[in-house]
Length: 192
Image (cartoon, rainbow, N blue to C red; front, side, top):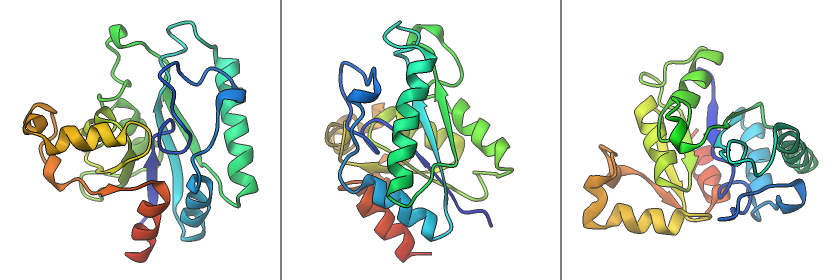
């Protein structure tokens, strides 16, 4: 069985910004996240990223800048002893109505095909901080997990409220919630 884990980027690996991460200078890792990725690798997990990057469609940065941001991230992860296997991203704006922008599961279907997996029979863990991360993961058949970093606290409050039924999640009450990526990883590797 292939061990794969899917991570959102902003708010899970690095600090998020309502103004978007528009340059490599604005990319800063959340404490413990790089070490968490290294631990996953050490326990045989391939780590991939599924991330909405609508700043491209909005004209806030271009593909070259996004590559520079990802290079900075990859270098920092390598220095911590880890590796991201592949980065999948959606460059579209919400009004583009594409199939790859989360909460749609298009990025997850690309990952499923690339790694020759069936998420419905082998639910791959998917870690995010927003409702759209959880919805996309569930729609693809993955096992959604929430971290309280980034937008995670607001998302947890929404899941706990009476409005949880309005989220589009079938099993919102069963989604595990963790302090941060490192705490998820400690739990995952303890159960493998």
